Length: 294
Figure 1 (cartoon, rainbow, N blue to C red):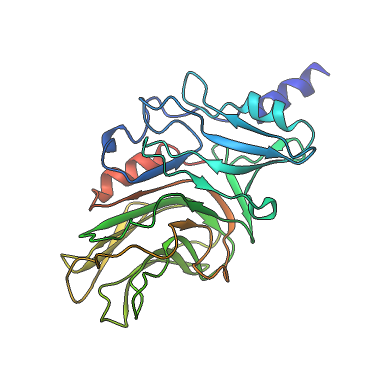
Figure 2: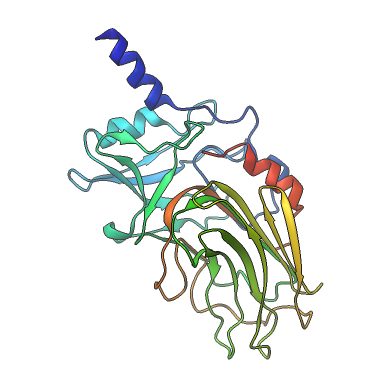
C-alpha cells in the first residue's frame, strides 16, 4: 500500500517550475501573459480560477513558494471530480485576464481526480475541440500597431485552427493577425497589412503531428514582414504594404483556442500564451518559453 501511495504522489506532484521566472526579462514589454507556473518573479496573484464538476463551485488556485502551480490546492478542490478553467489570470499586471463563462467551453485541468500533465510532468490545460478563452479589455491590441508578437506553447491533433487570434477590425477587408495551424503538420503566422489589402501574408513551418511546439509569430507591420519561430527555427515572409494598422479597435477580443467565427477549435493542450504590442526578440522569447514546457 505504501508503494502505491508513493507512485501516486509522484504523478500528482509533477515537475517543478524553472529556477528563475521565465519571463522576467520581458517585464514591462508584454500586453498580456498566461502560464501554469509563475512567469514573473514579482507576480503575487493567483494563476487560475477553476470550476469543479461536482457542485459547480469555483476557487482561485495560486502558486507555491517555488513558483509551481499549487497542485495540492487544485486537486484538493477538485476531489474525485474534474476541474476546468473559468478565468486565467494575466500575470503582467495589466488586468487582461482570459475568461470563459460557459461551462462547456472551459478547458480542463483535472480529469476525474487525475491532473492533466504534459511530458515533463508539469500541468497542462486540455482543449477537447469546443473550448476557448477570450482576453478581456483587448479590443485595442492592434490599434495603430507598428508590430505585434504572439506566442504559445501548445500541441494539437486537429488541423486548420487558430491558436491566438485578433478577429476582424470593423473595416473591409478586415485587418487581423493569427497564430494558427494550417494543418496538423504545418504551423503559420498570418497578417493582413492594411484595410485596402485583401490578401494575407503567411509564414509557415513544418512540424511533427501532435508534437509540443513553441509557436511564435511576430508581425512587423511598419517593416513589412511576418516572422514565424517554431521551437527556435525562424522563417520570414514579406508583408505589403508596410504601414501601421488602422486607428480603430477590433470588434472582438484576442482569442485563444478557436477562430473569430467559432468554426474551428483547438483539439489538444497548452501550457500558456503571451501577446505583445511590439517586436520581441524571437530567440530570447523561445528560450523563455522552453523553461515552462509542460
